[in-house]
Image (cartoon, rainbow, N blue to C red; front, side, top):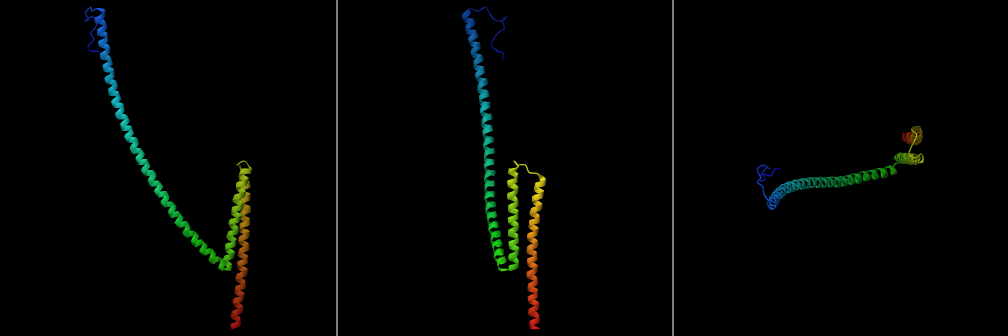
Length: 184
């Protein structure tokens, strides 16, 4: 920055060493004052920028906190709704199980479903064990073979229950036939 008070070499009169020292001191003082003013201006600008950033961060944080609160509320209400639905489904399932226990044909179906669940649980446990036994690498053919085996076992259980249901139905029909002919 060029000092307006400083004269060029041609304009300066011959001054003694004290006057030169005073002039240089004054010039240095002017430069220092100008540097302080520009530093104060930069400081004020920086303060404004920091305040602006702080304000925008505060707004963003408040907005984020509000979104988190809304998310928490929706998750909480979702949990409550899910718990109510689960309780309702469990109550209906228990009622169906009680009804199935009273009816022999439905009781057989219930046992079939329980066996199917057991087979599927065993297959999942077996796959899990094999997955870790093979260091987390399982051959697709092994999985396919297991799935086919479990499908076969499930189908065999279903066939067995279906045959039992048919025998029960035939016995009932025979009993109904005998009763009808007895009263005829």
